[in-house]
Figure (cartoon, rainbow, N blue to C red):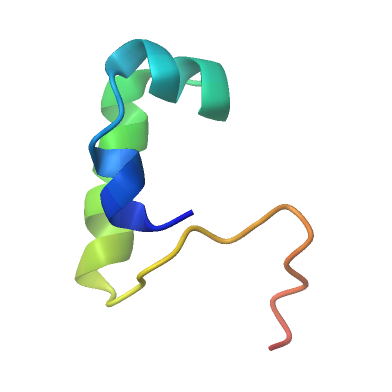
Length: 49
């Protein structure tokens, strides 16, 4: 999912999707965007790519 799409989600949608407080999720999105990430890593991402 693109980070920009996640940023447009409502707090309720963020809590439902990421199973955590929306404010913490939004803070993580800001950090990932600052690191020039464009998409959220998936659960199946092995971090070796």
